[in-house]
Structures are given as C-alpha cells and as structure tokens.
Length: 534
Image (cartoon, rainbow, N blue to C red; front, side):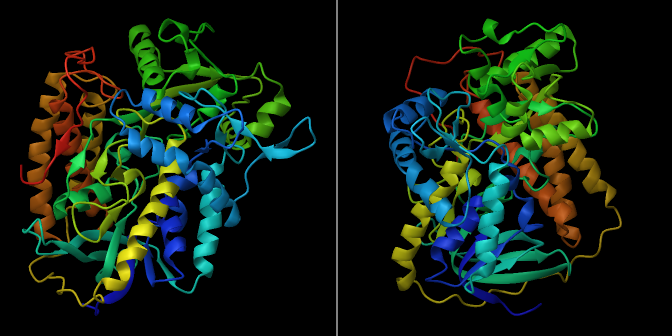
C-alpha cells in the first residue's frame, strides 16, 4: 500500500460547501479535496433555483426567519435560523467576489440590481439566481478558483471508505486523524491523514428509486460519520420535490420551483387546477404540501402524472427565465412556451443528517460536517426552497472560522495504519450488488416514501435487516468497489430513515403517516436523535 498522504485539512466532497471552505482556508493551510467522481458531478451543479438572501430594501431578516421557521413546522432552531439568514448578503457578496455572476435587471430609477425570484414558502422575492442554472454557475466558478490555488489539491475519482478515528471507543478523547479512500481509477486504497477532516458529501436521496439528485447522492458522509460514532438527527424528513419531469428519456430532471414562483399552474389532465383544494397558497405552498397533493391526485385518479403549465406567460419571458428547462424539454418534444410539462414528485433533499453545532463541529474532535450532510437545525421538519445553498456557504464560513482558530495548536498529521486486503478477493458475483441496490431503492420508495404507515415501516425494516447481513458478508469477503461502498452506505442511511420515522408518532413537515395524520401538539416538538450503539 502506498505511503500516507498528509494534509492540514481533508475535505470529503467537492460541491458548493466543500469548495467554498477550501477557498476560505487555502491561504493558511494545505487542503485536499476528494470528489467521488468528476468535480462537476455534485448536487450543487444541478441546483436550478438559487440562494435565499435578504438583499432587497423591502425585505427583512425577520421575514426570512419567520418564513423558514414556518416551513420547518416547529423544529427549526431559532438561533441557527437567525444566524443563517443574517449571513445571506455576505454570502452573495463573497460568491460575486469569486466570479459568480447572478441575473440582474434594470429598475425604473435606471439602477441595475439583482433580479430576485420567489419560491414556495417565501413571503418576498429573495431568491438570488442565474437564470435557471444557478448551481452550475456557482460550481464552475468555484472549481476554476480552486484549480488555480496552489494550496488546494483536487482528487477526482476518489471514494471515501471510512474515517480513521483515534480513541474511537472513548467519547471524550476520540478525534479524527484521516480517512481511507478508494482511488477508483487505479482500484487502489489510499490513506490520507489530516489534522482536520470535513464531510461535505451532500445528501442521501438515491436511497429512493425516483430522485432529482445526481447518482452520487448515496448518503456517504452520513454513513461515514455514523460508523465513526457521530449522532444523526431527523432522518425521517426526506424532502420530495413536487415537480420532476415525467418522461422516459429524461429521468431525474428537476423542474425548478421558480416556474411556480413566476406564475406556473399545476393542472390535472383535464386542464383544471387543484392546489387551491389543499392550501390557500396554491402552487406557492411549501414543498411537502405540494408533493403530497400531487401524490394524492395521482393515486386517487389513477393517472401517471400532473402538469405544470407556464405557457400563459409570454414566450420571451419563459425563455429568458428558464433557458435550461426550455432547451431540455425541447429535446423531448415539449415546448414549454406552448405546452404544459408532465411532472411527478421525486426525492430531492435530506433535511436531517449528522448533528453539528453552529460552527459545523460534530461529536468527534476535528471532524466537521457542512452542507446537506449536516443537521444544523436550520431546516427543521421541512426545508424552505433555496435555503440549501445558503446553508452551504454560511456553514463553510463558520467552519473556516473554527478551523483557523484551532489549526495552529493541532499536531501535524501522521501516518495511518496500512489497509488490510490480505483476507479478501475480487468478486465474481457483482450481480449481488446491483440486485440489492435495486431492491433497496424500490422498497424505500414503496414503504418509506411520501406517505407512510407503521406497517410499511415495519416491512421496510425487516427487509433492511436481511440486506444489511448480506451486504456485510459481501463487504468482508471481497475487495471494495465504488458500487459496493455506495450500497454499504445506502443501507445504513435507509435504516436511519426508517428508525427515525418509527420514532415519530405524528405527522409533521415532510413526515406524513396515515396512522398519525395530525401533529402532536400535546408537548413541545421533538427532534429525533439516534446515537450509534443504542
């Protein structure tokens, strides 16, 4: 096995959160950023909507806070919400300093200002964006900056296997010292030691068969942290985006919430609107309400999809605001300036995750978690639209402050124990991985999806127990591959989702169960919390 590579900071994940942190630390430390596949494969690259930020004089921090807490159904941490909203303008200014361009418009007074759109749950226009490809513009700008910096070392096609933790079984002394990583091009395990390790791996939405996420979103960071001994929280709150394009040639393509924000109507096949029957806010209700409404209409009427129609707006307006959606839909013979878009809900965002404090610190010394992998207390039971990218940049900033304050006092990174492959062989049964992968994602969709029951959750847990044993045996006998690592992580994440869902005996936010269809208001709202070994 090659000798250990050593860095000051190892960042696992190369999306907006990871690259933002790398750039904020790079003038003071040697940074390694590992990306499971290409640098362009992260969820940030596919984020269409934008970033929530109070930059308009008619808006206010107080309003942003109130909207976020309202969407979070009683489980948001008010201090974290205030902190995050307060960093909004600063985050936008920093991104612009890194070369990120946002859509602007000229006002009547002749001044050019940021164009702001509005999405579900927001009481004001406060979403800063670049047309409908905000994440792509951000990712490309941050990647370019990171590639230019001599202290940032970018490693594509490197998949984290496990964290290395010293004194793992002593909760008061344990600290992270690095990670074992599979170089998937060489099919070789490498050891990377670091004084600080940061998880920035994104969410876990590929645990479901239908998802808007790229294929990398397999809950890796959550599983890494859980195996290392970190607590996780609120994993039952998996957000389903209401509008994913329903077409066999374009699976997983999200139709931005901004389409509804700019006046798009949700329609049944007969052309009638239906959201007014579910919420007075209609199409601008929070995502959980809209997703359940669509799911209910599809099941009740036996239809394959509903339709999102913005064709009543001028064609030039549609093409200017939604060029990416317009072009992709044209590729499947849908002209959104003339036709409604067929849509269905799909798994979209992980609101729970690794428990962190306001500086992104986890339960293990020198281990941080930022972005979708973390449970900061911002989202509560339901994430408000476009708060996700904001959270990435705010907590990258907070983590940078904590890391720079402690780094000078930390010992240099040392070598790690050798990775032992002496008892394993190459697999001759890869079909086991693909079969288990498909089975897991199908029953999670059927039993732990938008609407749940106690019986469905019990069925899912029984299947998970069998899969866990089979995957564990397979992992112990064969050399690791990227597909095996993802499956190993997904089954852990699936179990965490089911266990959290079984603990919540009520419907709240994104967790809806027909056995307990109302919120339990007999006591203050509780976060679900899981601790390894309990």
